[in-house]
Length: 169
Image (tube, rainbow, N blue to C red; front, side, top):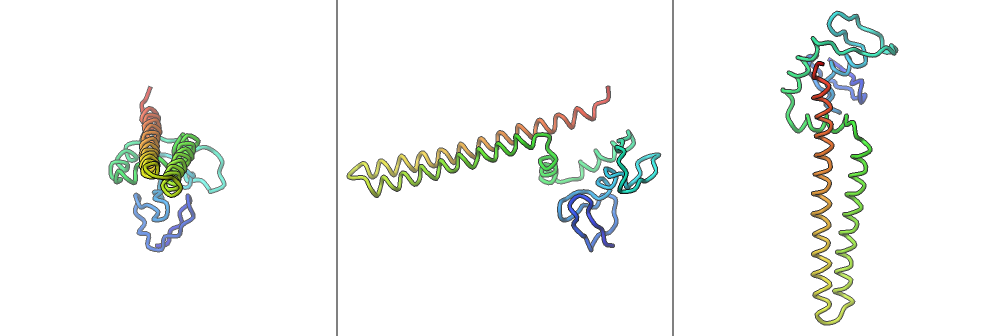
């Protein structure tokens, strides 16, 4: 069976037509994307055409299936999907930008240490190399830890919003 992903446009020539089948290109589950686009009926709802503009309603009957589906997904894929559909894309972009800025500082420290080792005299050569290397390694560690902590914070915020959206008043 040939199946086209509505999310990324990837053509899957080896699709089997299973309800929980995912696109090999982006990982989106075909049935969920079709339901979000209104092309697949939910409980008690007729299918709509692709040009329909009315919003898709999530029914209580569809929630247990979504929870079961989330339980069947490997944790790495779940985290990737959570990050792709983040509610905080600007924060994530800023974290990435700061990560690269701090890595650039690390490279400058390494280069400065090498320059000091070549251009310096006596024991200052060794000192410049050690200080440049130490600061470079320090900036690399700070960049990686800061990025991981910041993205973890965004993941927690996204997860908290998703959990809160499932609670019924």
